[in-house]
Amino acid sequence: MLFSKKIQMLNQKNIRYLLVGGINTIVGYSIGIAIYKALASNLGIIWVGILSNIISITVSFLTYKIFVFRTKGMWVLEYVKSYLIYGGTAVISIFFLWFFVEKMNISIWLSQALVIVVTVIISYLGHSRFTFSRRDI
Image: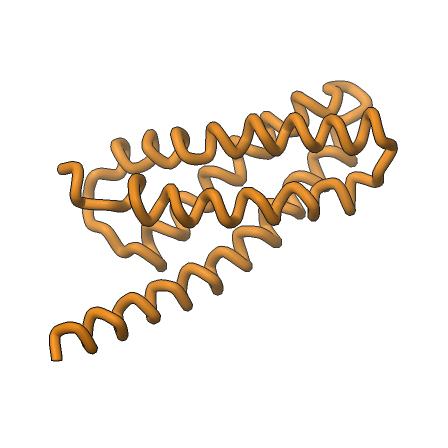
């Protein structure tokens, strides 16, 4: 009975993660494109990537905390931990975004989509095992 309840909770969290993650992906993708279109000529792709990551990470943190993992309190600690998870993926995504757009001349639309696939997988593993985990408290 306990095992069945645990599986049901896990599945509900996974479904919430996929739904919220899908929304976060669309929002993050849109933020990246909007900032690129508005500021790339003045800032360059790396600064566009940094700025869009700061905004997107904040949005993702809030939606995952509130709707997926539903943890209480510890806002600052979890926010900092989310930056640790997203920091690695941000460096990877900014590098590949720069490489695809500047060096391979792939459109920002396709480049951003390619980069997102990797970050979704890494972020789920990191958030579920580190950012919103209560094992380390």
